Image (cartoon, rainbow, N blue to C red; front, top):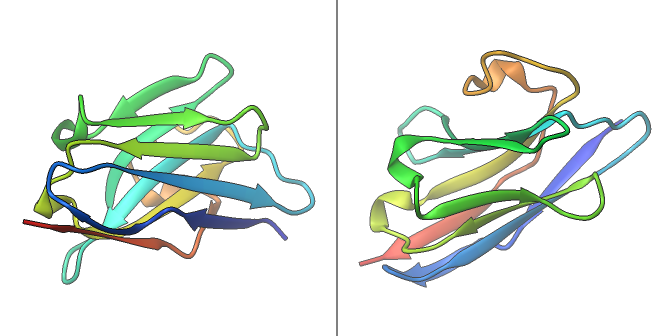
Amino acid sequence: QVQLVESGGGLVQAGGSLRLSCVASGRGFSSYAMGWFRQAPGKEREFVAVIRGNSGSTYYTDSVKGRFTVSRGNAENTGYLQMNSLKPEDTAVYFCATASGYRGTYYLPSSYDYWGQGTQVTVSS
């Protein structure tokens, strides 16, 4: 069973930074892509960023471009989301997710095989 664990969330003032981590474990784990999603109260889960493939191609939703950076650790089972210049509208529970193979629709939650439990990010104004 594959498990993903996020960490690094917390309370930060607007303009501040946080770095989220995601560590995967379990037998048979293979991560072609690691995506990050977020869900605010009363809203649907939305795509934030993804890193995928051997080349490490990255994609971001427009609202975080230039502020967030997704990356992989030296170990295949680790990923990060560096969040800078945070805004109150970034407040949400953030989830990491992995896909074992290529999926064209990386921005859809249904494209991912495993999910973490989420970590709360709160940005105060």
